[in-house]
Length: 116
Image 1 (cartoon, rainbow, N blue to C red):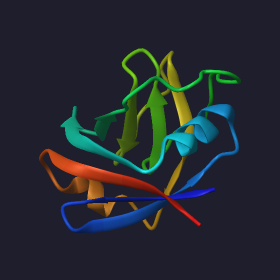
Image 2 (cartoon, rainbow, N blue to C red):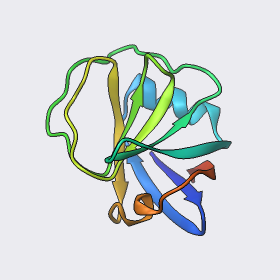
Image 3 (cartoon, one colour):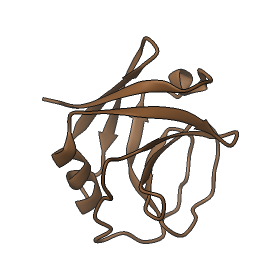
Image 4 (cartoon, rainbow, N blue to C red):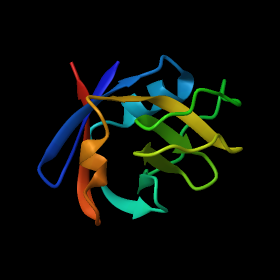
């Protein structure tokens, strides 16, 4: 399952894990959101509704390029630098082709669509 994300002239894809939360995200597509910088290691975008948390739990192997969902706030988290798992974080998949686009600072419209 792949999705395409685009903002500020950048287009990139993510390979989603086959999980209830990822499938729930797919069911909402296409979406136009707003992506913003958060902290020093991620960009975030709030979804129009919360995703299912079914089957979620702690995970390891955290890495730059992870696409996650933060359940308490209802937002996507796109990590461009290292991070550690925290309670409520659900990994949805990983970005393909590196994290370069996420280094563009600022707030932008974010398009998210399914890749057929």
